Image 1 (cartoon, rainbow, N blue to C red):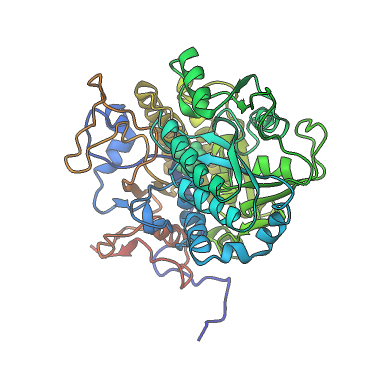
Image 2: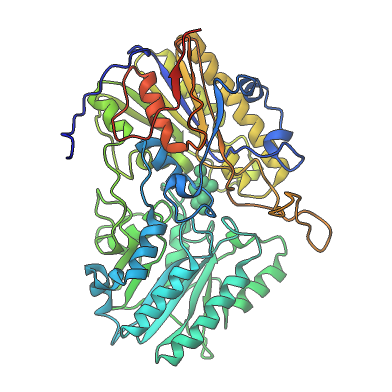
Length: 560
Ligand SMILES: O=C(O)[C@H](O)COP(=O)(O)O
Ligand SMILES: [Mn+2]
Ligand SMILES: [Mn+2]
């Protein structure tokens, strides 16, 4: 029998109400053997090192990848979306990757309203598929694209144009040709089915289309020009030729930063501009880096850049990227419904929250934390602060990013006495880790440690409680490793191969502060606990028992 839902939480037997609680999410900060390729190990991090000495009572590891965060398998590394969903919701939900897998395997994807909408264009017009071309499994998956393409061809698509975004961030730098090759081979089968298919445009994900949280609309505009108008500074006959030529011109160019290019036919005309009555599908399942493009494709009123003459298209997302604003209106797979998150419970129990990050992670600690929900639950009990990220500077050129500014704002929020729950995301370990620049990532970790110190000093001053954790690993491993020996894999020049992606490593979870009741420590009966166990833990720190359906708390109380 289902229990009647109640928002009001019971009082915790040991933790008292009214304590100031600081939640610090270190983005991309995992635990890995402390060798020379672990930037966190190499960086001077005195504050984090001192905390580790409190293990096992107040420092432990939690799982942040695979099944623990709702991904299809334990081979899947964690990511910010699934990590922050689990942290904020206190439960594990099957995430976009798995939902798309299921919808394709069962054929349900082709029965939904979204597919019906786009397929009405199949007989006479072109189907455009746009998204991240890799098997990283964070934003999209190549096998899903191939299945979708085939499914569409089987169901009458006559002309398919694929607009590719090169990865090199969730997968190895320089791996783009491998994925293009697989795609090109699939086109042969598709053409044999009577469907004319090819790549129409491309570019690196960080330079073209996949900006997030409105950091730089220019990135979306250059994608728009290439995809919709068939206009880009570089034109080539094939994507492979584009990669070869652009790399020759700039050998340091990484996949993720490739400029936009358009594929042209022998007549010099673009192979696949988006025209009236065409169908367009963005095949990324993850929302954050597709929301901006989805707005450009889906909204009638749009003023972020000049779209030129807007073609009348049928646009659908692989998922709906923002259910609150119904963006996009049409989609192929229904996203996970993540309700009754910790933020909503805190509001119902009159806990005042303050959340902050810099632009590139702001949505993680607000929108994603709240179960992919826009806005606040209560404008009187919550405040969200965004610190503008640097624009136009590679993250490895300024590895300090905004860590100190966030920490100082969090310190001030805590000391102001106006908030019970102060929550931040410190982005450096992740954003700089993704560049693969080892030296810069060491500086990033050093800055993170300084930021943590500022916030912990404030917790000390208000006699509060802190909880530090991370959403997934990244900075702790900068090289690809032999799965069996753990040794770095060397390239032909004898150098370790760079790892730009996240990892499958666990992340630390650390509790403390003068407000933590004596005798509260980590329990030892949850060795496989994951990020979803964190919410119950900080709800306890606010003086409440967690909701009954949340993953169990990490703490217990033992009198000495
Ligand atoms: O979008 C990105 O930057 C990467 O694909 C994943 O990083 P994130 O999950 O930490 O955002
Ligand atoms: Mn992250
Ligand atoms: Mn990341």
